[in-house]
Image (cartoon, rainbow, N blue to C red):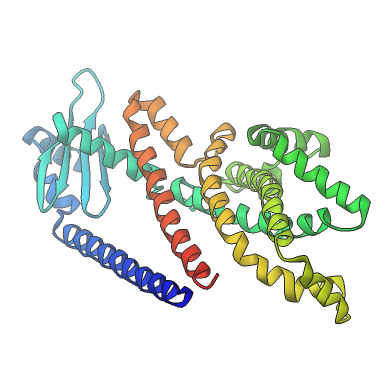
Amino acid sequence: MSFWRKLTDIRNWKTSSKAAVILFMAAVVLFSVLSFINLSREEMMESASDQIKQIIEEEKESTRKYLTITYNDLGAVSYLSFSTSGAKAIRESYVGFAGRTYNADMGLAKFTGQMVNYTYRMLGKGENMLHGVKLTLMLTTLSMAIGFFLSIFLALGKISSNTILSKLCGAYVFFFRGTPLLIQLFVVYFSFPIFFNFSWRGLFSSTDPEAVYKGAFLAALIAFSLNTAAYCAEIVRAAIQSIDKGQNEAAKALGMTYGQTMRTIIIPQSIRRMIPPLCNEFVMMIKDVSLVFAISLMDITTISKSIMTSEGNYLVFLPALVIYLIITAVLTFVFGKIEKRLSIYE
């Protein structure tokens, strides 16, 4: 009966995987088609009013520039706006979709144009590598990798027979699990430089224009890694202690040392049991990284807040919400497949 159940699970997994691949490919094809037929910047500029076109021609022969042109291309949909300053300010905006241009000065087209504009800026288009979604994913991935590496030693130390080592590791886990992550970030970013007489910016070249952001990124990476290590340590400890103690006794009977037992028998078996909670911790970290807005690091949340402050439009938080939802949905789907794959033969 168990064999047929496992066989059915395998077939169901393959069927669902095929359906997911088909849907993904269909989405890619649709996006590619819409991107191919979408209008270019020059083609969209043909839709500008005669007044805007006249200003563009005048600026070609003048050193004075007072017309601002914004063009944001997200592939399947694009946004173009013109704006001037002064007493007779002019503003026009357009949305390009499916090979056509739509006036985006009011109604649904205006809302769509704003969403395209905000999303483009949050994704870090045209910016350096430490912006928007790239920063969020980079900081999360690095923090989880470093934190998990540290957590292995913390977990082994906590369950060690050495009382002092066990107490120290237990105190570390208790401290970082018992204090707010935001306060930990503040301590690392603001207090550490005072204690050790340095500046995060000073760790990088004085001529580097991104020294402030790189320093903030390094501080956030340290804070999140230390915090993640404490939570992952409990996951690793629980997975290790879930393995039947009889295997430890059998290893001792064979003359294996504690290190050999852990390395070759216990840890390889416990890895599969760690994966589901570690995947959940990764998804949680994606959302926790939004706290870097407190040290002005330009992630999705910080960029959203800066756009809202400059334009006074609270709708900017809608694309931020959708971006976070898409990221977590994709990761949850991938991690779910990994968990099912590794639990087939449980």
